[in-house]
Image (cartoon, rainbow, N blue to C red; front, side, top):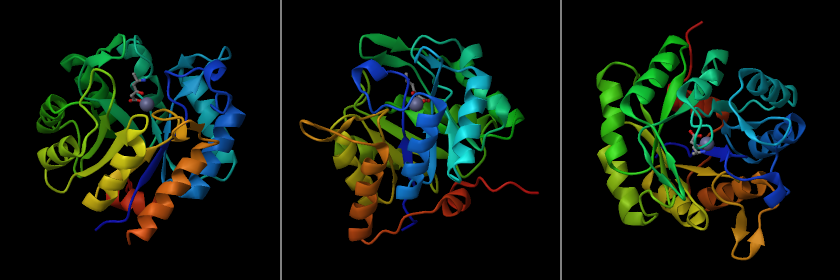
Length: 274
Ligand code: KMH
Ligand code: ZN
């Protein structure tokens, strides 16, 4: 089995600091939280950023400020910029961080109801983002919320807009998306092209259970405040690092070593020719 790649989704775009005070939103807070999550074992930081009012933004300069702050801490994790942004953002807004030439970016592979809102990702938007990633030499990770989204991702692959090895993140448990149960995780993991890298981002209490199943199946794991703010029932997590550290302990107990950021670069095909 390949080493386990842990992604820390440290902030997200749908929670406000006013509702959960440990959420990192300033560049300093984001940098510290990213460093600690990396130090605890995360190879990838899935990055959203906020404006001066604490609201989600896809502004290129805001991303640059946060990425520079993370790098300045000595954190060497792979930075995966979000191109999902927040529900309701336009494609033009969402694609901005790709122009910074990051190593990795999320690419949402379909639309769904997202709680009380609708997260809209029609074919042209997916294709436009994929094309921009291709032009900037940025690898996409397909965000999959239900099985039909894999077909949308395969269309992008067949059009030559993504290169092997392909990456898939199964985001399970969004109200309006696929249910977060082991059968669905198995189904999705078997529906992607052979030799793809895949992982699971379970929402809420499903983060732990689906993460453990993914470790056993050979998949990767995403943890962090974007998807879950609890350590256990009734107890908020203190930090993203606390959630990462638990996955490290569980994986090592199950005999699966943790991928460093450089291991992950090799596994995911992120190493660029000089
Ligand atoms: N905020 C969600 C609606 C991504 O980062 O690519 C979308 C999201 C996905 O967070
Ligand atoms: Zn995200």
